Length: 316
Image (tube, rainbow, N blue to C red; front, side, top):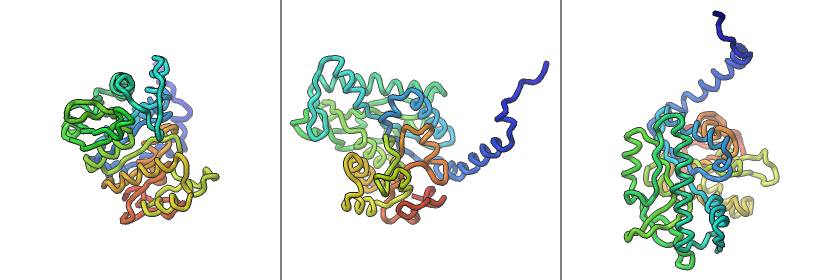
């Protein structure tokens, strides 16, 4: 019997050398983050594109396999809106937030806990029995209170009890958390996913929090997509906001990153979830593909708009 044929790529020493170089470049980061907790806020187009969802699951499993404690927090605003529309329920928004009555809350829970969470868990578990889905209302994980009576059952995080997450991580599971919280009476609230991700990262003393968005990160020049800022500190982000360099939808994204760093997360990354394998590219390569935000006390960071160094990437 003749041996199985090999592809041209597999016999190409240049291609093989490039793959080896990528693995060698990743090694110090794997060592650096092994045993650390990294929270990933998952949303946007990365969640609705099946191909990107598959690659996201592969990234999470690889991170888990090399010893990183991965916690996934997900929203589902577009999916909630789609189901409300199909059910003939009209959505009302105030200051960008959906007014959530009892019927809307039921739909939100069905989508977040019953659909989106299950899809993420299933995609991860294709690679082994790794992921466990849970709601912030489970085991008292997220204690919530109403944000504004006029918004109905829209909540804010009052406190996070990380014990259930810690137990799942200790048993080598990947927690996948939907953003429903509950108050002391058991009343459920729908909470913004960025807010939940920040609160969980803080409670877990996370090394990193990665926000998957639909943008590449912060740009030094909004009109120049090549002006991506690889690494920046919170004071510099505040300066960009004050100068008007950040505007529109970038302001809440940047503010979410600032809030997380000021809450004690070592570094926060804004990355484009529409890039295939974006988690691996950001975590395990010298340059990364997004923007890393750290406190002003960070020991090392790249200059505004400048090329990062390996130290800048490794040390938040």
